[in-house]
Length: 405
Image 1 (cartoon, rainbow, N blue to C red):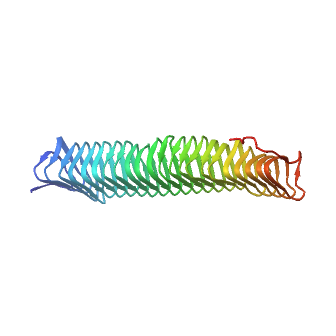
Image 2 (cartoon, rainbow, N blue to C red):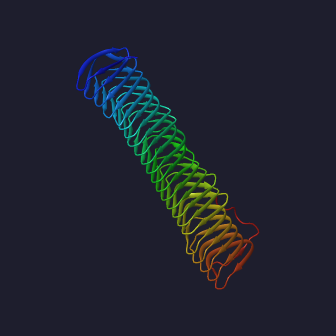
């Protein structure tokens, strides 16, 4: 196939080229309607094409190509140590740009790879997208996998997988399999996802739902959230109702609405639930606060419990010097030494040494040394330690009144 060359620094007018076209550095091509190159177009240095372009292959070497209109490449677009700016839409079977790709219209390709910056002002459709530096897209991103080494900020997404070394922001959508971000991740609209792993900070919009979430630093959701297992190294905050399989938080977890779990809630610091907590087990190192809590298994709190309607579990254990407001209802209830609690209900209740309770209603009761209670009602047995005191005196009944919750 023949080749037409345009010398360095020239300005030419072209419409159709029967073979290949080669542009030397600093060339401007004025276009009669549309530039159609039957073969390959090669640019050796900076070049400008003043209208729409169509060619078989497009190659840019050590320069920047600017196209004033749509660009259609039947096979490969390559820019070695170069950049491409398209003031229109871009379509190619594959795109590989070392430095910068900027497109004002829609981008369509099987594979897009940019070493530096990708700036899109419309939509992008591809199977695979890889950007080494910054990736910005105003419209929707549709792809199987996306990888970026730096900062990513795009519109709505329809993806299988997303990986970002720095930060990533999306405007909601679907990421079916996994999200992995080294720094910060944010979704500004509801997002459906398979799993989310973030090294630093993560924020989700209200109405998001997905699988397991693992965040090294702080995690936040603006409203209701559905998840698999939530694991947060630092702080977690959910601005609505939350439902999932299990929760593990190293610091503090706050849920403004209800929290419903299939399994365990484990929090190293404190947990505050604005409405009800339901789950299998609860372990809190510090303070637990909720309107009410119902657990099918054990509840263990090292610091304080504050409920309006009460905490119910198969087994409740409060640590040394702990505090509790609101009734505690369990099969077994064990209160640590020097604790201060209100009302206790259970099959068996043990009040630690020097602990204080307002009232105790249980089958079997054990009062530790120097402990005290205003009222004790039991139906089976009672054991009273040295110097333990019951203000009204223990009272045995044949049947206890129904417990709260």
